[in-house]
Structure formats: structure tokens, C-alpha cells
Image (cartoon, rainbow, N blue to C red; front, side, top):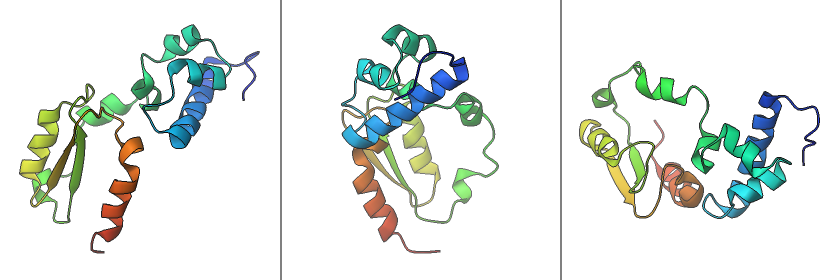
Length: 139
């Protein structure tokens, strides 16, 4: 656990992120509450909420929106390797139609829509995702 006294905003944000990641790895993304993350990071819930609106926000880097809205440097329709997309049907960060669009333009892509999952479904679906990734043919 981190000491609160004398921390800069950047150090506080790092402490929150590290403790959140630790809790997500231990308990999955859905289980830990904001209060539990705040306690683990030695901050108040209100301090946590000064920096982050919700659990997904904790994991988003400051420049994620810039990356998502910038050119990717390649065209999805030019991808020639197997692509498996997972998307939560309650994702409020990236709308489901975006995943459906990618699944139609990436040749041979498969889309798995995960009921009740939000943006950070990785934490709850990691074994399934890794199993499929490990079974993919090596290029």
C-alpha cells in the first residue's frame, strides 16, 4: 500500500492504477469496487473520483482518445492474418457498431459479442482470449 502524504497528482494516479490492476488481476474487473481500489491506493473515494469517473477510466491512458481517433497507419481491410474481436454489448467507451464494422471490413474476422460485458471485458474473458490466441496459426 502507498503512503498518501507528499504524493504528487501523478504519483497518486499511478498508485490508483497499480492497485486497481492488482485487484482486477486477483478478482476480475467487475468485483472490486471504487471504494476498495481507493482503500488499496491509500486515497479517499473522492480523491479517486477527482481523477477517474469509473473503473474503466482508471485503465485508460491519458492519450487513449487521441490514439483511437488518429489514423492507425494501416487499413483494416488489408489485414491478412486471423482476427478475433471480442466486444461487450454494454460497452459505453467504444460503441458496438464499431466492432461490427471492423468485423465486416477485416477479411475473415470473427466477432464475439459478450452479453453484459463492458469495455474492459478482457479481465473476465482472459482465459478464453488467450486460449484462442494460443491456438492461432503462427505466421
